[in-house]
Image 1 (cartoon, rainbow, N blue to C red):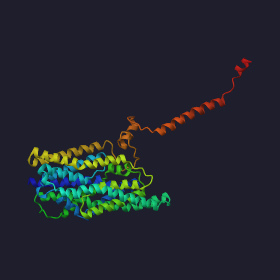
Image 2: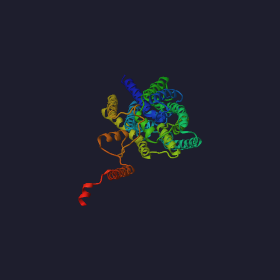
Image 3: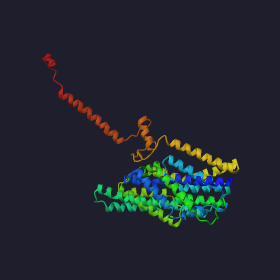
Length: 430
């Protein structure tokens, strides 16, 4: 009876991860369409949620990779799965809080691998599958996406260089609706599968299904629904970073980036690669800036994101291993429930912190003005009000100084023109 309850808790936690995956990755599909105003924010997330759910039913190849290609399914226990999910969810929430578009896929995989290492040692991890199916695609996907998007953007810019700007914007905004929809559909074919694979692992560990079992329909439906709900809520912090923080994007760049993302994601789903859609989408957006002559790419923001990518797997792995260690210290099934309780408490704390400076559909398209200390645009806005920090523009200061000098010169000139001669003094002198 207790094991059945534990299985239910693990399944609920896996669906919670799918939910966080949905709102964390909404920006991968819709950030550029929202930034260029091709779609209203609420309309964009509703469209993305619907297509994510449809995409979840189109392919199960990635689910099989997660269930059988990363760790030894014969050594997996419900405690290992739960600890891995704790690692994945907490990393998702932390990066969401700071608006960092990190990989939900790698957070999940890192959490599972870390928990497995704590439980069974190195023999519990299928290192060949981890390298071939996860690490190599993680390295190659952004590079491929940058190349494809930059070439596509350059071609589009060349072909439309003589077209009036307003006509370009109007036409490509319509095209963005189609390309963003394709990315959402592709995202469903890849990311929704990961929670399906985790739940299948849990069912195998509990003996509810044989090791060679396929994914049950109820698992497919529940994962698709959880991701769709998360997507509809919208991860506005991450959407803002992708849409405004990397490149000041126009509709031509947006369509090129989205088309590039969809092509790379669909190709990886076909071959069963557990690809990070975040890496692909970010690479495509950067590529759209590289390919557009005169575009301003914020490489500093991209560098911070790259650092987060590098530490995602080990960081989530450490949390997963720690969660498994806590379960062992408490002992028995109670340890698993304590681990779950800590997850709920920490998640609630992160949410409460995020409410101090909310980002939502009303301010997601505000101008990106990070402070000189490297903070977010919210920090910069607060600084303007409190006087805590200022940004100094040397050219603006020079212009202001010249204006002050010219004002004084003009004032002196005006005084000399209007002053009457002092006749009294003249007469006295005479």
